[in-house]
Every structure is written in C-alpha cells, then in structure tokens.
Length: 241
Image 1: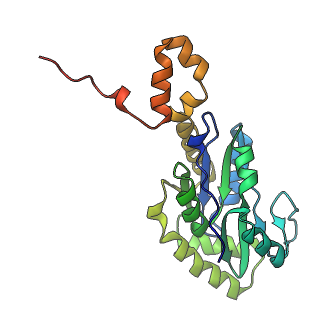
Image 2 (image 1 turned 180 degrees about the horizontal axis):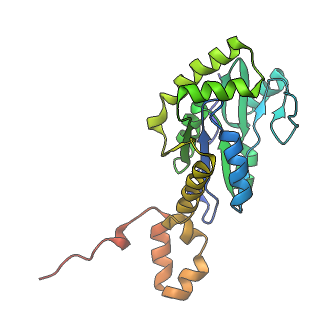
C-alpha cells in the first residue's frame, strides 16, 4: 500500500496560480474545449498526464500524454510522484505532482482528469476549482463517439456505460458546463476562469503592491486576513448605541 502524496494547496503560496479540474465523459468535447480555452486565456497551462495505454494515431509524446510502461507508472506511484491517479479502461492515468507545483508558481493549471482523480485532488487541494462538462444528451454523446472512428461497437457501449457513471458524480463539482454549442460552452469556461482569478484571496495575493499604495500601513493587516481566508474585515462594524 502506497503512502498518500503530500497535500497541495495554492493558498499556502501567496500569488500562486489557481488549480482547475475539468472532467467529462469520453466524447463530451472536453479536450477541444480546453485547447481552445488555453488559446484564448493567457497564463493557463494544461497538465499532460502519464498513461500506460498505447499511443493512438496522431497523438504526440509530451503533448497529448506521457506514454509510459506499467512498471514505470507503478514506480511513480511507489515514489509518491503522482498528485492523483486512476484506472480507466484497464489503463493507468496520473498527474505529476512536481510539475503541477512548479507551474502553479507562475500560472494557473488545468487538470483534465476523471471523477476519481478529481476526488483525490479535492482532498489534497481544497481550493481547487472543479468543472464538469456534460453532453446535451446521451444520443449526442454516442454519435460523437461513433464519428471519432476510433472504437469498436463494444468499446463504444462500454464508454457509454462509463459516461453515465461519470455523470452520476456531477453534484461533487463546483460548476457544470453543457457542451451543446461549442462557442457558448467555451465562453462559460472562460467566465469561470476569470471569475475565480478575481476571488479576493487570489487577487490580493497577486496585488500586494497595489494594496500598499491604496491603504498604506493598514493594507498589511487586511491582506493577511484575506489570504488566511478570514472575512472579518468585510463584516459591518458592530453598532454602538
């Protein structure tokens, strides 16, 4: 039994990036949406997962996945090198903790993972923002899987069963985006990222100089409270008769 990897919480590092988890059943359009989002929004990085499955036509090492043998993956597990991992369609997938920690110092990070990995991330990074992308219907999802032309009928049937299992966990997520229209779904994802960047603790963590210029010596205390997750400074003062 492997020892749990240490926690990861960007609140421990003032000014650190935000961690976004994006999940979706296979065929919902998650990968296309994430690629478009990264092209539209600056300071976003997508984690490239390690996997034990074989490379598909058109996939590139280091861009789509890091393709590794099963014994190498199991060694990474034993070394606590993975922030999360899951067994999907008889293959392992996992996220490098070292990479995520390094990139979070300067950018926001997107993890494209399944609900199992999302659950592990939330336990280790309580401030992670989780999003599930849903198809508009099961019929649309099945049609998209067939159009990809990558799977047998049996595999598509299995993916549909797993898609339903994935979607039963939707209440665990902070946001739901329905990909019934690509541009609208992309706009919703962008809005979520920008809103999360504007959260008080994240914005103030990146704007220490601004707080100092606006509030002078008082700014230090207000900033400390905000970064500690305290809201007392925003509460109305107690009325004195």
